[in-house]
Image (cartoon, rainbow, N blue to C red; front, side, top):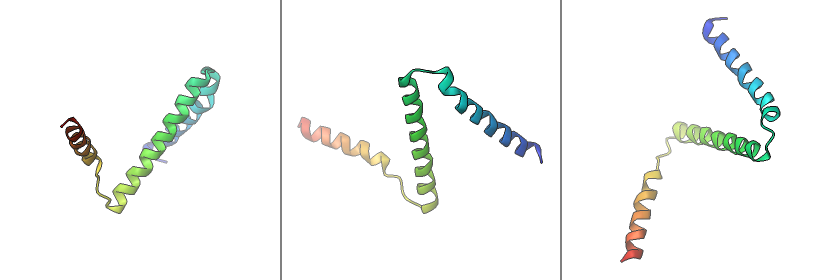
Length: 77
């Protein structure tokens, strides 16, 4: 096993240890809920990155800002 693989497995083991100890250290229900929500959003982000990267899907996120500005200008007028 080379050093890169050993580092990868060591990192995975450390993350699993932190995940196992987390509920024992932080007993607040709010902190636990925030951590779970963060993991859900991280998983959704990774899934979207895989979807848009491998499928060639174009990013239209910037169009939201143009649309919001146009809508605001229209309502203000």
